[in-house]
Length: 368
Image (cartoon, rainbow, N blue to C red):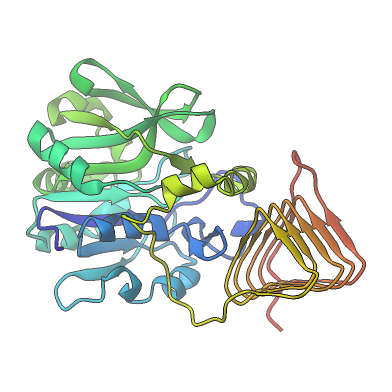
């Protein structure tokens, strides 16, 4: 299926409000999720499942891990002669305000992507609010409404300092975009659809305000541009810092929540790896956990998420933790309420323990 109505634009050129351990060596978009995925997989998969075959991906300065993961877009059906995945240059610095992901300067810098397209609409998405959405339904609703921009929102299930909320008036028109989001607000999920011709007009008209987010730049013209809203009834999971990353990841171990994100009719696609299935030794214990291919489990794993190639030796215990690729948990060691980044070795008979309110985070091991 090829979508002839829209092209895609995904921005990864922004940072979290807090520069924490997980982000010292990677951008937000390439943070691992549920063992085998990355955050960037979700916007790419939403677009691929909608048949969008031209996608621009705006890169941050530390883009190496994103390029290593997405390559030419083959795993999302984007390695094409016409269209395909276009890594786009991001500017050296992006917005710093809470919830602002769509830097106008980046959009202006990549004007050629929109000029060369033939499709009438552009779907723009961020990376760290993840969901599994039928984009075609939203594109059709946008087309039928005749408005300039359609912003997608959900009812906020909790407070989010690093998200934005929409003030919505009559007929679903967006009056204002506010920083921060409280329980019950209309949480913007960093996804909107805009008429391509209108986007090109904005690029030309607001060039002098290129240091702003696009919605800051056009705020005074919402009524003229006709900005509308679309409520998404599904699950949208925001991962803004290590605390929310850990909490939302643990929640996704619940099969009910997990099935809302990982659907058979709209699969989340990711980079293919050739790895043997996980191996469980006699006497090992694994329960309520997500254990990826290539793992070797000889000890105990409970309520945890293990990426590819993790080794849990005999007598070791992993509880309520997220363990990244290639980590070795030596015999007798215990890891609890922790995030252990790539390639670390937890020595035998040691204990790494956080609390539910203060998660222990261990950074990526240096390459030797």
